[in-house]
Length: 632
Ligand code: WTA
Image (cartoon, rainbow, N blue to C red; front, side, top):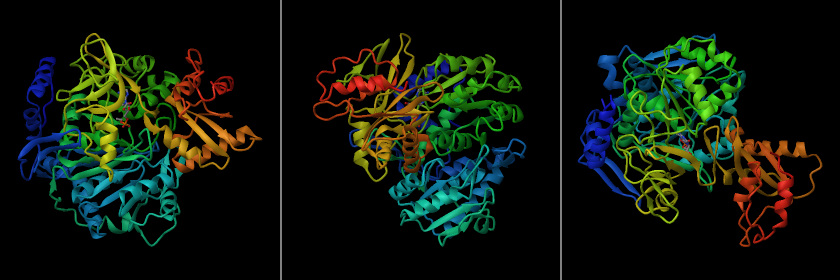
């Protein structure tokens, strides 16, 4: 197994060793896995292109390391524990041996349908065990998975399917989410009707048994998977072969397909999982993320299984049947490590302490947060009410592009400081840059967060558009990976993440590009132009504030706002729906026609003071109007 730091001395020694000899450090970690053929060069890199390769020439399959490798010693240990949406329904579990068999059957089914190494497979599924099984089945045969969060719209699904040129979509009939029963197969049908010519098969898992249309491309999971052989030789993959594509929003254009490869991702997700959660044999680990996001990929599926852990997945939502559900599950399964998002903590905190006080949470040893900055109030509530002061909080900073946790305290070993991600994991070299491209040295400073040396699970490219990868991440600063976040390094060298410095809004921990929302809003027939900014939101962290210019007078403003929201739901999905829509007659612009978002952000934050000199704007008079009509 990869290194698991046990005390502060080991943390310091590992950090030192990894800076002096990064290749040696990662080689040590990589050596703990099963490789069919060892690599001949540990690292080859050049950031400007970018061209980063880890464990060059190494041959392996990540599922042999997630599953086969554990069979001898942990064959009968639970690998995957599943808690269903309905609180009264029985949980399900799969031992490593059972999970291995299910993955092999599904892999054989995919093969029988003509899926081979390198083919892309899109997923549009609820949080059921079959999702994990099928994701691993893809990896087993060398197909590239791309999981799309099942809250996205048909249009968003079609866009991603076409960008990936996927040969197959795997979905369910319906998704259960709390009291809702969502017809997801219908969404897939709608996406295909929009034109997804690359799709040859839709594999449908019967989840609720609700009625669905059947098309020529459809195959039921139960008609093809269960009868397959439970043995499937894993495909031999090159360390740098693609493992998956995950679409994520950026500040411009359509979402980009972040590409991760096999070898480096394997090494880093296992290493970071073991250290940040301090997982010990026999522990029950639960991450509440959806597998449609990177957190689910790295810390429900790959990291824990690579480490031979028991990982739990939950089908439902935190407030169903009531606001005590998370804590009920923690008590029921004696959860030891619990990993969730600040937005969930804030939402549950708002429901009152009685929900958490009802349950025995004494099994909890580590609490984690991810996805957005956590405010002090939520941090203390989590620490006191959930952890009872006995379970250190790890505030983990990372991104879809980084593949794994980059900056985090280590529970019980390094200091936990409210609202601080604190220290990089050994092997990670963050730095702060100023706008002119100079590194800001020393402590008690603030700047743009970059990483100056490659790490194994970093983004390799953006699918089908390598130039975009270069421009977004590797062009802002020479020889650095640029994160898009701003950060502070305090007097003790501890990192605090401030938030995005680009036009990306972080809504409930989900990244949403303002340009994407504007494009969606502009699809409404009565909208000429729109500008979208983020604003502080008590529960979601950031909310979406849209300024819209209507083409002809709006008679019923509420009905109009509803229509605009519906348009966004149709184009992207409900998560991108604006919380506030202000109808304006114009947008503040520079003389070159650029929208002054800084002004709009200030007004949306409820603080219109200190807007600075607006007289140089093309239309300074509009500022007063926008201020007057502000909705917050
Ligand atoms: C933000 C999620 C503050 C950050 C794993 C980053 C955070 C973006 C934290 C990536 C944290 C993530 N504290 N902010 N602990 N973790 N972020 O790609 O702005 O969905 O750039 O990956 O979330 O979001 P993504």
